[in-house]
Image 1 (cartoon, rainbow, N blue to C red):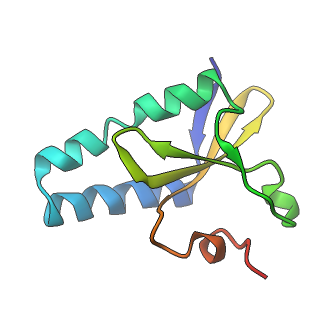
Image 2 (image 1 turned 90 degrees about the horizontal axis):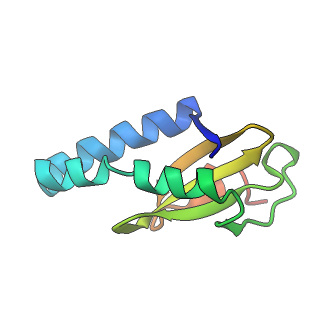
Image 3 (image 1 turned 90 degrees about the vertical axis):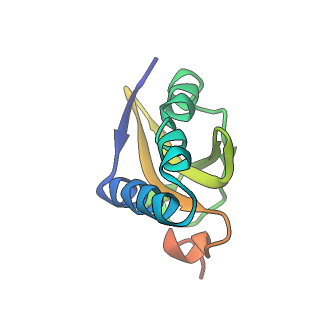
Length: 105
């Protein structure tokens, strides 16, 4: 199983989602979301599990997306790399993730 590395932007995303769920849903829901390590373990075990996102951005070539377990509207964007998985962002599907990732032209 590969090691999962979170970018600074992904770490900020995770904290923001946790705080939002705590305030708008409940502490229990936020804690359940925080168990997304299950999803990270899935992609660490099978790096090509997620859907390949087509992009012309050189730094995001090979980026894939995968849903957070039990929170399907939250998407993990990650890059399989030799020796590890880089989680680039974790975004809600209702957001304009194409622009947030710099994929829109």
